[in-house]
Length: 458
Image 1: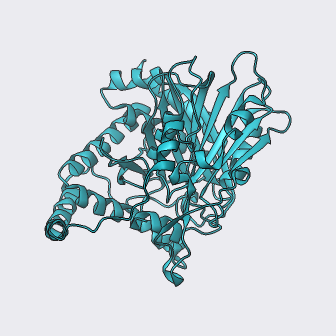
Image 2: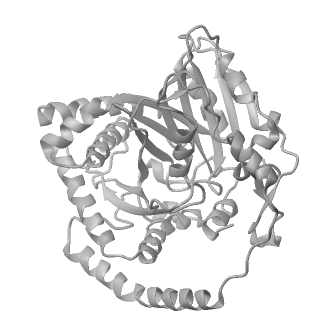
Image 3: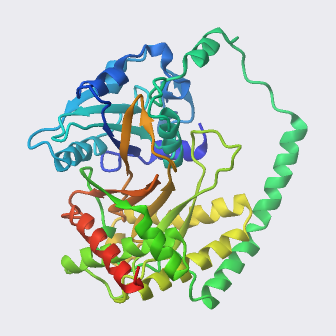
């Protein structure tokens, strides 16, 4: 178990469940009933489950936490795969209420750390699947890749399996493969790695000074603790509220083209406009701009699915700016400065700087800090690229994929969006008490997008 993965287990508590989730909504194939989804996800045997989904934390080492995985030899699929139905009046609102409860409950550490809930009973005949998996097993990018692997762009394909299941050929190969131990590392390779690591660490000091100098001269660079204090930046409880919405991707692209900015800049501007309206409605809009921590994917094409390979940058959201186009310009300047700095860093330096960006969240757990100190940032906003084509699961059309993420002390709201085919799917996860009436954010996102379109004359 890697140190980042072990850290996600160590910091978990009842108030801080550390799993990521995903809600997928499907239109069932012609002629099939709503029970189709249950049959698709339960017609499996334990030996068909991928090894990663049979891992559970080994017994902790005293107060030091978990450092190794063990394989669950008696996997109980009835525990991991559960059937549910949307209560009346059977709308998406009731589906989101169910999702909120699931996202707020802890996973059982005595079992592999994942659950799948198949959901029937939506008024329009569609079905849903909510999956949750601990952040120690996969990060959000990995979870999306697993979902993509499960689906097919071919609407007639009938060989799709859930992401936690192996194809039959792989199951047979795994069953017949010889059981061998880990090879001993090459001492020369270990020595070379140690020398390289020492060199990287020695360069951190000068790099930090360079970034600190730039933060004083480059007004576009947003750094930790530039954020004002809001209701979103205190202690949180364990209950969650999840809401989601789909928007046309073309609307975001048109704004990006007219204003000559990135799609991500437009997404941040829409979020910034929505947060401005949300906090103003609650009487808590600060004079200073809110800031967002934006996770950055550090994977390359050689990285395996699973584990955590993420960095972090901080961007201004321009919530103190009334004009939506000017707000977009502020955001573009901030993200451009952050990317320019990140390009100058090695992967290790980038990882350490990302750790510095998020380390301030730990201060929120100190007694009294919430009343006197500034938060390192106000909100987390993630933009994850999804499939570029319409996807299907054994003939069922995937209509939307909505991510559910992790709030923390000092950061009561998390906004994650996925670009999928010709749409953008937003998922907002928040502390139920610290971020009241978070469902209003869906209306504010639409209003902020329309306002930006009108101002940019799209």
